[in-house]
Structure formats: C-alpha cells, structure tokens
Image 1 (tube, rainbow, N blue to C red):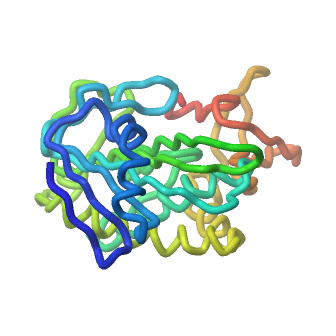
Image 2: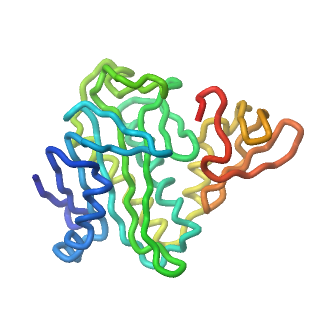
Image 3: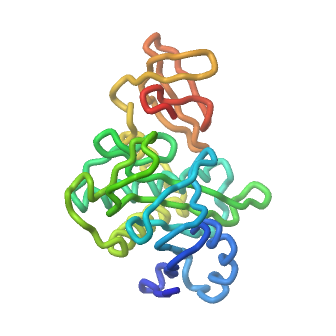
Length: 258
C-alpha cells in the first residue's frame, strides 16, 4: 500500500489488490478522516479488483495494472439527498476534461458512462450514506480503461485510451488530473453553485442535440435530451412534443441496449 497527499487537497492510498475500491473506501473512510482531518477528499486506487462493481449489479472487468480503478471519498456538509447526483455529474465532467487533455474527444451517456467513438471508455458508480435529509458521505467509484487492449466481455462495446490513440499512458498521472478536475467542481457543489455544473453536463450528453431511440415499459420512442433534474432524472423531449422524465433504470437507449 502506498500513501501520498497533494498539498492537503486530498489524500491518496494506492493498493496492489482489493475487493473493490468502493468497498475498501467505505471500510476505511472513518480512519482516513481521523488521520487527515485537514483533507476534505480521500482517494483510493488499486491495480486489481477481485470484485469490481458497476451499475445494475454488473461486474467491472479490468486487467491488473492496466486501468484506472479509483474511488473518491467526500464528506459534504449539508448536501441534500435530492442533489447527491451532482457528485456523479462532477466526476463525469472531470473525466471528460481530463480526456480532452490527452487528446480524446468523448461524450457522456446518462446517467454515468463516458463514451469515445461510440464505445464505452469509463463508468461511474455513486454510493452514499445519509442522515436525515442530507448526505453524510459519498463514494464515487470510477473505472477508466487506460492501457487495456483486450476485453473478455464485449457486449458493452468497451474501448480504452490506448485503443483509441495507439499510445500508452501513465495511470497515476491520469488519476491526479481527474482528481484536480473533480475538486474544482466539488468546491462549486459545496458552495451551492449547481446551475453551471448541470448546464455543462447537459451539453455534454449523448442525445443532447440529436434524436435517439429509447425504450420504456410502454415501448420505443424517439427523443432528444431536454435536460437533467438535480435529483438525476433525465428529461426527454419526444418528437411529438411530449416531455417525459425518467429515473435511472426506467428508460434505456435502444442502440446501446442500456
């Protein structure tokens, strides 16, 4: 295990192996906070996960040491439960900005994926603990395919930074870039400045300016993304003018299948 910090902005623990960075972060969150009270953010990374998790109960597969497996731990002060999704938005935009730095053009797929050239490059898993009406701590898990070039599971059309660019990258360097980009957005969240954050997010979403085919329990329909509510609901404007809103798992992109 390696431990480092960045000018008291965040602490970073790197593990050779763990079950999942989110699970480890949850177990160690209280200790990290007590040992580093001046730091508001803690980051856990690992070379390998034995039980990596994605959304919908999926397994996140990653070659050992090839990709970025990280969890950001935050303990916000008075963040309402119904705006917790802003943390996932901040992470998604941090990912997108970092990819721009490395020359990759990406788009975001609601609610939690990063795509490049029509293939999945990264995913985000947000978990949180609450007390009353507020979030007491949150764990933002990020899985970014960096140097992996072969994948066992192809149904989600995975890709990697290396496959897209033909280059190899330093995983730790990318982690620090994402952390820096996340922190500035997290600070905006703590100040209650959500409008600019969600505006940037909505403009980056797949389907924002192009109609896509969706499916809900009533069947298929074509719509564009009108916006995203603070609680994470997506607003879809159908071709007939109807405005629909959905929570996660209530609607799916037909082309991608989820």
